[in-house]
Image 1: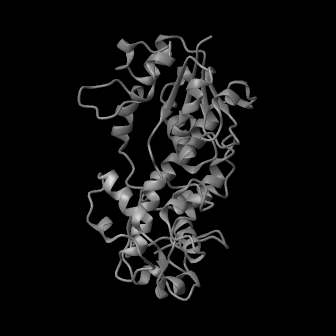
Image 2: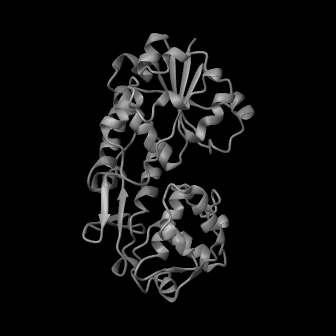
Image 3: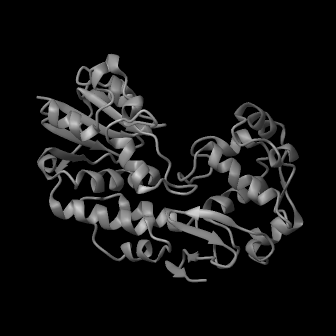
Length: 330
């Protein structure tokens, strides 16, 4: 039987676990920056054209995927599954928010090909897939569920909500049953917590950065270590961007971040990494006041940041009250 696994970048180890004929990890980050256009995402999963910058097959190791011949690397993902008579398409996406966003994106996309719906199987990956050892994954019993049209409809609804120009539809998802998408609701609540707080103007991860620095963790290595903040939304480079926003505004909350970061090319990874490592961080008096809830960071500093399809600015500043689970409009 032919079996394909679709997963996030956290699941690359599945390619070594010998559980499928082809493992396709997706690399898109949907938790920061502007979302890719629908046309771009369709091109990514479809047949490769000469001008395509990225393609799903780029992340598939041909030497570990007997299902994908080199001459087929230009084909669309669904075309390959149909051409080779794939029996099962397994979805391995753990609870991490970006992985859950990838899951609803993929389910929304596969919905356009009803002939493949019957082959879909959702694995209930209730553990950190990135930290799982491939030898353990080879034999691990992971419960699976069939996917039906109602599940695809929920995924499409959630993906449309995240792409919307305001977070209102996403907040509405918290009060709705989401079927077999067991981890989508907590992931969405974690994402909403990254909207500015009505008290401090900071998102959950920004708050944790200030708390850790206040606790004496003045080195970025410690802050950027996976799991160090107790949140699982952003990767190292996304955390760096948040840190810069806290340090380089008109009213900085953080002192000691290397000033060269404000002028370095974002693609100059080596120099930026060195600048982060040189930094010795501390809270300013204003940062201490923000952390204590006496000041609102956003009343003194500009913001221009994407949250899904929502562009947050000082004029259009949506906020999230975590205690009351309440979205506050601008």
